[in-house]
Image 1 (cartoon, rainbow, N blue to C red):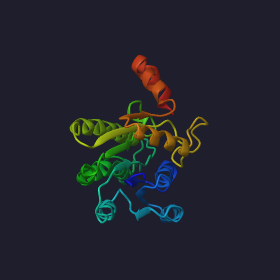
Image 2: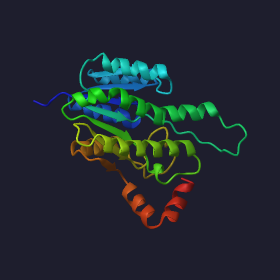
Image 3: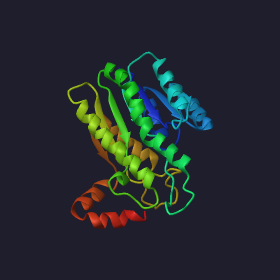
Amino acid sequence: MQEVRTIVITGGAIGLGRELTRLFCEQGHRVVICGRTQNALEEVKEAHSQVISVHADLASPEGRYRFLDAIHELNCPVDLLIHNAALQFSYDFQDACVPIERIETELMVNLLAPIELTVELLPLLKQARAGRVVAISSALARVPKKSAPIYCATKAGLSNFTRALRYQLEGTSVGVSEVVPDLIVTRMTSGRGDKALSPLEAAQRIVSGLEKLQSEIHLGRVPFLYALHRLMPDLAYRILKAA
């Protein structure tokens, strides 16, 4: 009989997060998700009875505390913590009216929330037989694009936090993985090309990589881009600049 695990996924009601939720539920695990869209959370809950959904905005301290409280109320170890929620806004810093509030929101959701949730849930991850922290990063952490400087910066920060955390947890029962996907068909990437992965395909590859305990999971064209960046960085930067 397969062990029932507790999986925590931020942004688990839409896009990639929803497909990850579905796959883990189909494996018989309990999945705790959060999101800002109540209707989407209710749809996932109706489809999967073992889902625990929390209506929470990770950009606010109150939202993060609400999510953490729901997890602690389960009074059980956390086997897998997946930092999936992210926002991406476009900016032109030559514009005199750059929206500071939007910048703060993007920083909170993409970088501060994953760090804070990791700190708060690490004791529960250590209680699991083999806990794991998973960060959904981006190739833009290494090769940024012009239109989304804050998103690129937060993903670079998340990538480096993830690697440093892996160093710190060496020798413990908690592993750390970074997922770097190619473009995935979501609301965030709508209209950005026909080579994007479907959320289901990306989720299947992520679950497979985690089952193999891979510390780095690169999807789609990311290995090619990283190789190009090592060999011809200027060309890689030019390609992604206007992506």
